[in-house]
Length: 223
Image 1 (cartoon, helix red, strand yellow):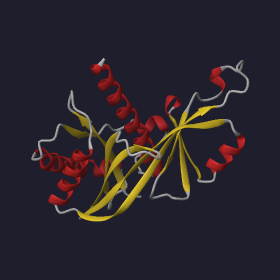
Image 2: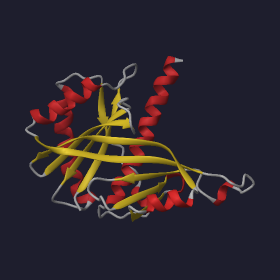
Image 3: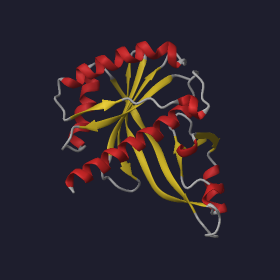
Image 4: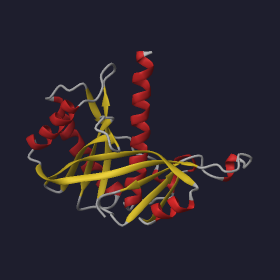
């Protein structure tokens, strides 16, 4: 499948994300001739265990894990245990099974949603990060997908060059922040150079950790 990078918006010190930044990012994509397409949505859910026996040793089960649904794989669901570097692909019905077993409960769900754009061999998705059933903006993400190649190493130079062009276009807007690409160590999750949706799931989990760190840093600065 096509390779992609998942990036998050890193605000400058003292600033926060807002809908104006999201609008300007979308306008920037159109300024470099991105053709606007349909909407997209991914959902990331935090699960935590339901402890019926408080005496069970904590090491016997994951303290919490993430579940991710991706628009390109509507019949699949991805489970990630970041602490143990585990990623699993399951049928989407696993969510109903988990609910019936009542071993884990949903703690919070976040939606990544916005519009996608076509730009030659690239497909870009720009989206907001909002809690389920809320419009409270928590972050901004962008996917850069390179359609012709599935090898991460073979596409790295092309992706880096495109990202440079993108950063240059964004710099004209003088926005208080920038998009960051922090590539996870996929080998730790047992993933190869050949790109799969499991790579995407790991990237979303990584981005979520970065967004949480950003929010915590802002709150610490205020205190």
